[in-house]
Length: 262
Image (tube, rainbow, N blue to C red; front, top):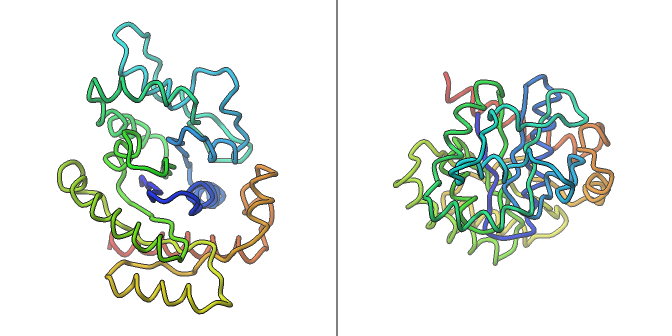
């Protein structure tokens, strides 16, 4: 299973959703890999990795092998790095992604990530891909490589319009490059259950025909604390309401996958 988490709108919780769903997957015994394609490296930081440290096993180094004529290629399976949690691995981001992007585009390496995941999927049951908040080369590579798409959504009118624009942009990419890409659903994040406006926006999104997943993830200061401590919620606060909501969301996604199989 290759799942990508993407929205062109920033600040909607992509990294939080990526890491926490992956951590739950790993805690359930699935060998799970997080790939961080965002130069900001929020997922990498969340899992305790400093993207500014010296290292040669980042996603930038892995992709750079495909752009250089003379580099000595390391095996793809050398790149996933263990985290502090059983079954959970990371290919971290790097500041080098910025400078590498034009070279990858020039050499038209848009399919190389898909080839890489074909190999990694032999070793990892679940692969989660975090993305930048724009439709750049890395996001397109991830969408071409993935099987399932989750879109985080934060319940404001600008986010609703961004969602419509996003789906328009994705339709062409899917038709031209990856017909296997399936929209699993919209993940409502930072939901305020006490206000009427978020519910109205959600109903509008449902009327547009988008699959809105439940439960809705509530606002919580504990998410920021989890980030600060660099500990996913399932390990930081396993009994907290937000952790339970993530677990329910993970279970729903698993049920949908099983239903499709059957």
